[in-house]
Length: 324
Ligand SMILES: Nc1nc2c(c(=O)[nH]1)N[C@H]1C(S)=C(S)[C@@H](COP(=O)(O)O)O[C@H]1N2
Ligand SMILES: [Mo]
Image (cartoon, rainbow, N blue to C red; front, side):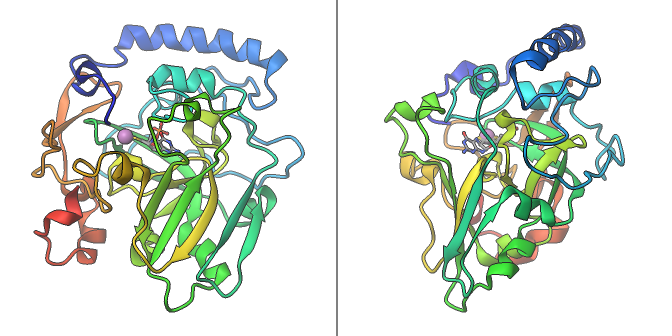
């Protein structure tokens, strides 16, 4: 995104080669041992998957175990190590590995999400309330606007289930999401380069679509802080920046929300941001992507491979505003 060096956005090297991945796994084993003494979030378990199963003081529901090692197109899941180390979370750092490191002690419990605006029943959801929704697994591709992608086995529930509880009023046309603002915990927010807090938005029908989920976990465990714990949005047919992390507010609104990226770089980022290989970013092509953990680039798909489910939301399909 804007301040990223061209060397970072240009996928000039593969992030995790096999050899590096092995090294990462060894390092991870060591760090989860250390974490056993210092970090209530991380319960050291298996070598490969060490996210928390429960949060202190919070009863969590049974989380569904991994159902498959592939997505519906046959692509293998991205290794847990890569998903949890290579993250975009600018509140902590603009460096991918730095964000994971600096988010380590982020307090994700207790936590509340205020849901209001144009609704009949505004309500504050605590973690226990969020875990009351039945948690399902969703294996989704995630395509970052920078040109890399992953296949992630999320755990969560459809956003529609939460929105239905607060009963949107008929004037509500959009949903606006906001990330926690807490510069003491999130050092990146001390930089005034971005208009904090991070804000994102969806049209109400996009928000109500069954593919749109609020994620609480991945790989059968609760989210680690760097992936947006305790609650983040996942909208798999849009560029990854729409999938806002560590949400504290959700408002039903009448006017199209202005996202952080629209405010920071209006010529580069619009409201819809649907994945389209034929519409280049002003500074690079979107025709292909680097699948993290693999050696080759693969073609990017219209709506990130979910066209059958979502293309009807965007008519006529050739309007430019749908794709930036
Ligand atoms: N609050 C917040 N949400 C965010 C971001 C961020 O910096 N802050 N980065 C976005 C971007 S650019 C991407 S690609 C995804 C990355 O999710 P992941 O790090 O869990 O893979 O989160 C999105 N959500
Ligand atoms: Mo991204």
